[in-house]
Length: 229
Image 1 (cartoon, rainbow, N blue to C red):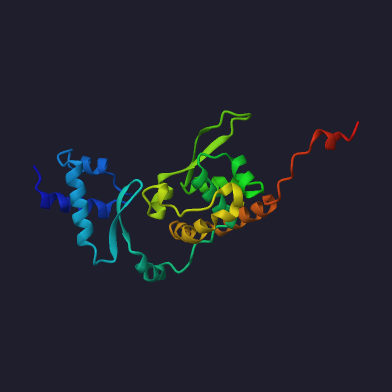
Image 2 (image 1 turned 180 degrees about the vertical axis):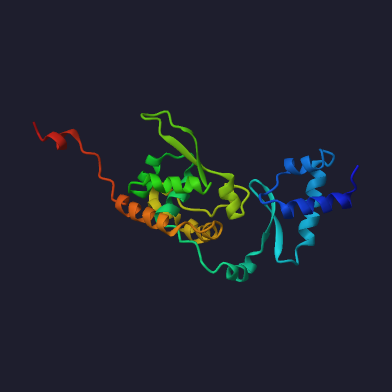
């Protein structure tokens, strides 16, 4: 039976070396289930306390526990990588926000809220980043895909649940303008959490989105289409 001191040492090492957050299930696997979840949580609290004076902190995110640099260290760490990744377009961030707040949601739902058509490349970009995924299809004509955010989305924000997203007004009343709290509080963290996108790809996506960001025409009635016959 491993003693508490050694268990904490092993757990701390595993957390430091892991490239992804570790779940409690994975931690138990490390110890062949000889350390229970309650003990693990106590060890995690002790480790977190021991790192309170360091530039790195132990935090819980959606998919588990991980070490990460403290926000006040960003200014210094950014000097190691002075080239910032291209900023996401507002259209991209608005689409992501709509999915986050209204999930599960179809592309048509997103377009109704934004008031413009949405380029399929934009949604693919969010899927490639691992922030959104298709979780099913709506039982309607064409069976459109239903999109939702992923644990990776929450992990990159340092959140454990969607409840921690900033509060917004009802999307139906203000449209995309209601997403401003998300844009101000969340978007910068997302942009800092991913590697740079090839500049040519970003420019191509922006050009395509500019062509697609046109107002959605209201449906033409039968009388308007064929005149007063």
